[in-house]
Image (cartoon, rainbow, N blue to C red):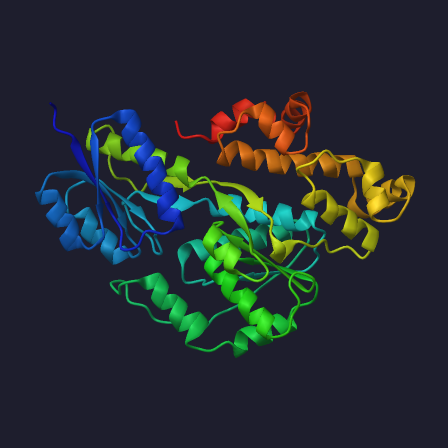
Length: 397
C-alpha cells in the first residue's frame, strides 16, 4: 500500500475560524485520498522542524508575526500561514477579504437607514486596520463619516508570542474602560458600529450596557466571524458577518498540494476567506428611521422572513392601511414594500443554501418563497444565477 503524504495542521488553539478551515482541508483530503493530516498543538519553529524530520511534506501553521514567517521560510517545506497579524513576506497565508467585509457591513447598515457610523478594533492588527480602512472608504463614497476608536499604541516585539492576545490585553483591557465609555457617550445617536471581530463586539456590548446605553436603539453593533458561541452569549445576541471558512480551507489545501508537487512556489499568495451574509440578531435588530410604522414593518418582515408575507398582513400588524404603508415605504425607504419582502426571503434562502444540504425546493418553503419558481426568479434577478448554481459557487471544489 502506498504511503500517505504527511501534512501538519500546527496551531496553538483551535477556534471557530480554524474549525471551519479544517473542515475544508478535511474535504480536500477525502477528495484526494493520499494525505494524512497530523493535528499538532504547537506552531513553534522547533515543532515544525521536528515534523519535517519525521516526514511531513507541508503544513498549515499559526503565524502571527513577520519574525516567525522568516523562521518558517527557512525550514524548507511548504507552509501556509493562518491566524496572521503582521506581514508574512513570501509565506502564503489565509486571510479574510477585508474589502468585501467592509462592503457587506456598509450595505447592511445603510439598508437599516443609519446616518452615523463608527468602528471599534485594534489598528495594530493588520486585518483590523484593513477593515477600518475599507469601511471608512466605502462610507465616504456615500458621503458618510466613520468615527474610529483610537486605542493607545503599544510596543509589541515581532518575536513576542500570542501577539493578538497581548495587543488585546494592553489596549482594550489594561488601560481600563473609561476611555471607551467616553468615546461611546460622545458618538451621535443612533449610531451603527462595526467591530473588527466578534470578540471586540462582545466586549463593546458589555461596556455599552454597563454605561447605560441602549442596544440596539442607541447603539447597533455588528461583529465579524459569526462565532455562534460568542454571538449567543452576548446580551443582546450579536449580529455578525459570516464567512465561508470551509471553501477557504479547501483552496488552501489545493495550493499546498501544488507547492508540494512543485507546480507552485511560496510567493506570499493570499487564500481569501469570503464573507457570505450577515446573521442578524438582537444587536442590530433595529431600523434607524423616524417613522415608527416603517421601523415596525421592516422589523416584522425580517422576523417573519421564513413565512410567505403579504402587504395586507404587514399593514394590519402596524395598524395602518395598505395604501398608506406603501406610500410611506416608498418615501422613507426608497423602494416598495414588496421589494423589501423579496430581499428578506432572499437573504434567508442564501444562508440556507450555503450552510445546509437541504434540497432547493425545501429551502424555498423554509425561506418564505413558498414556491421554488419564486425563489428561482429572485435569485436570477439579484445574483444572475439560479439557486443551485449559487450553492455550487459557494461550495469547496
